[in-house]
Length: 247
Ligand code: PGA
Image (cartoon, rainbow, N blue to C red):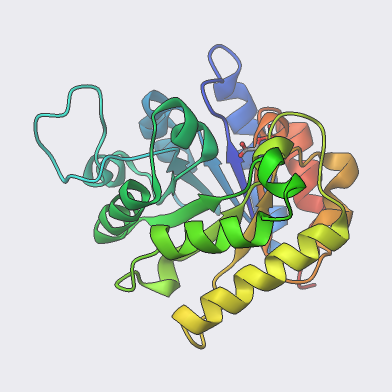
């Protein structure tokens, strides 16, 4: 199980103390086979990675550029993230897709760049509410996977996050049946593209301590990508405790 926190554009003032709290709880989670990853804003990565060195708490980023380096003002490349101590990066989050017009082709290039920098690569997919209402959710996600996952990716270092857009930050979640259907479909697609690899499939969208146990118990759910509830150590660790561990 992987419980990943996506802090988005949050964490000023309180982030360092909350991160310390997460660090304090990471060994207990790790002893149960639950890995914790925190993805703060870029500027916090270096300091957090230093604090977490030697601990089971990993630090990641929320995005990267597809190029290794060069004239891209305001962007951060995967090698720069790795040098700062990040071991993972999220690509294709729906907020990137919406706010920055990122499409599957760009997400695919970012995923390749992330893996070249040896970062664990979390590729996000998920349908909008209109797409779900139209009965197209599974087809939309299949199309996103096809466009976002080049065959060259190394499945050992790949994670998929299924995040229905309408569930992000809204307090609404799909039924466990709908999560099971989607995760089953994603798992089949991944088995076809990367036979024999057990790529973790995270669920994301309004995961919180009170619903984590039921969402994380759904077949083919390999963890959670948590936004709002990952900002507080208490909530983040409560979600980790709700994850079915291996002991
Ligand atoms: P949320 O965000 O947990 O606040 O819904 C999840 C995400 O966007 O990764």
